[in-house]
Length: 393
Image 1 (cartoon, rainbow, N blue to C red):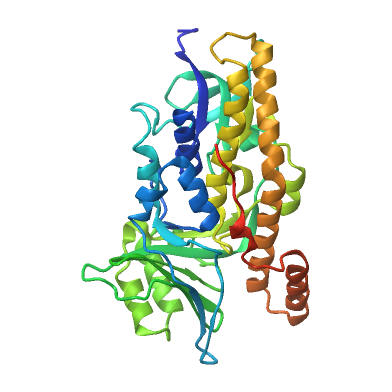
Image 2 (cartoon, rainbow, N blue to C red):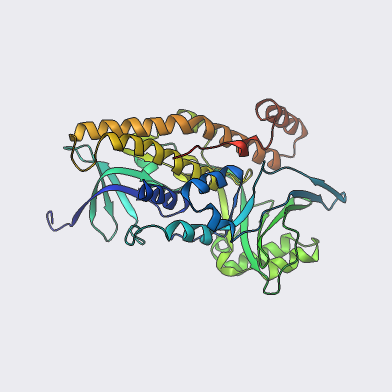
């Protein structure tokens, strides 16, 4: 005890028990925050999951998607489009978190312990975390995987995330007697509204709807029934199968969110490390859902960070075989290597995601043509981002 305050010392603290946090923890073990509905995992994400050793187990929970289609009701037109080179599946978020968490030692995850503040100890330069209703933790390494509203990102003085002028509804609908949908990703457009759908398994469907404007009443964001009612209004005139999917949606997995992103130019110049503190996942590079790469990129972060740290920690034992300054130097070098390896990958993903979202948002033809020109110049292969391999541990 220190002045009546409990102080706990832990070598490595990972803030956040989402996809990136659990993946990183699992990787460190080997060398649930179950909010949200589902997540698309593309080929590059499955490569990372295979490095985690959970790919085979997770594949049993989700159908492989055979392709993707756009349907425009106004013009009665359909068109196929690519979403990934290789494997692609839509995975229930809670299934992914459970698979990641169940191989962790008991006591690794602590729920209900939000971090209030983070600072560097003036004497040791190691990070210290103050928890709400909990002890003060002195750590040797802190990795912020605490999402878009990251306390760790704030400590690193990263620029605030920007608001994309768009909101999205994400939902799960279960079909006890099977849904009968082809295992493919489908986007249906009518006017300025579009609805997307992807089967997870034979009995569960993930779907989303992008309304053309923000709800005027803030209460809608927190009330599943109001969200469902809004979706039914916006989907008026859509096929009956879409209306039925909305009507039968699970209120426990129904959310309306304002989309946020870290600008590509901020990702390019940001300092993602101070001392022995860094960030990963949405805390580092939150992006819109337009490429479906947010979750897969977070899994990549975990693999690369664990690989870099494992190599350097092997050179500098955290438990005292080397002096404190040597440990901090080696960990700092590892984090710098991690940031260097990830930066341009994330700049590319963030830029392509931003331009794709902007293309959906704008109705001005000159701007659309300009965005398409930029996409053709910088991203001539629209699914090239799924070819990326984060490498082995």
